[in-house]
Length: 81
Image (tube, rainbow, N blue to C red):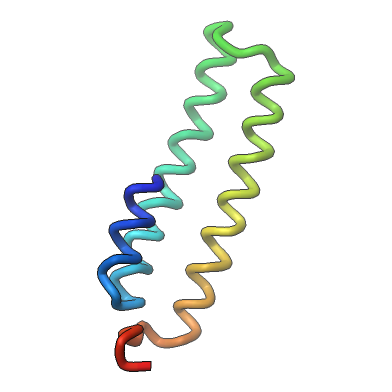
């Protein structure tokens, strides 16, 4: 997830950053599923899973807000602003 964010940011165009943010949002969703799987296999306790899910959802909100902000700008190049 963090690699998707950094790669998109380094592209220097909001449209490309948005593409990689979508990848990061999807990866974050996969991670959330992994927490449930880990709990189901008794690798995590329910309280640990709940805390991780809460963090995961907080990150998802941040990613969606960043995506929405870029979408509102129309995908401009940051070097042109």
